[in-house]
Image (cartoon, rainbow, N blue to C red; front, side, top):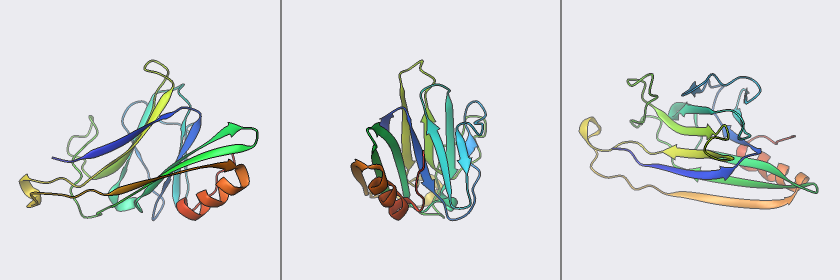
Length: 169
């Protein structure tokens, strides 16, 4: 059994996933093209626009334990939501892609709706599993959510500090 925790967000922003190395996310539905994903040496940027259905997963071994969502709110202002959580690169993450039920290890999943369910996306993280082969019978999960709003320059500075990259969109 594994715990997952998600935040549903309004469309029209970008999820930023800091990584320890260049990492290729797994597509859960349709192939995510360069219009919706950018993979850099130390982060992944995923567009949530509410127009095309995409879901990606990133393995725990690639992650630093933070994920953020940044969007323009008009008049030169931006908002930034950052979730800080614990990652165990050697933990057993059991929520697998439907097309690869033996492909364990995904600690982050991000979803972009195509408008059929609403104009939203999801930013979620998973904890290592307990029970069965893990030899663990409990797990205590702790995370923090930080929210910022302000002028674009200030938010870009915070984004760079907390997520390792600024957003120039």
